[in-house]
Length: 239
Image (cartoon, rainbow, N blue to C red; front, side):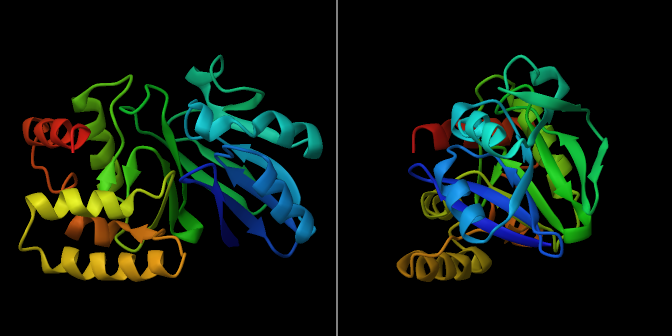
């Protein structure tokens, strides 16, 4: 399986998970259709599934056009069936979603939204975290609670350390500045900032990160309790 990063809108990332033997793909969170179609057409790949982590428009905006063009099935959390456009396949927490060689565990991670899920492609050691876990950050809390977000991040922290994290936005540099403000002596963080700066200077994504890197560097994952986490999340909202 190959994972292709598709930049969308201003700072969003969509992802194509490609079965190169069969030239078929799934797309994660297509905020718009055009960049996805451009890649698929250029590489003669057929889109089979659209996987949505949550219902916000900048993650589902391309659903309708992609479904019309390719006949792809839309997969999303069952409790968001009235929020995610064009949904065909309703999945539940802890369910294994599988089609041919595509195989992912569904993990319910509320906080950013109540119906937020991630797709954990364990055979590929990759997790698609939408707007819950970012590299060096976490999502804003819109529909859920601090406690829900804290518990959701705890679920992600328990994944194997070499799991690659593919998140919904290119926020890493700004996130790194906030982390450094509250974790000034973190050598791993300072080294990571050097790496991400080089990537951005070369117009490369800072994604993926890994669970191990985030445990070492992400200030939100270092929070020991909901109180500490809540204070950090409030500070980040005004950073």
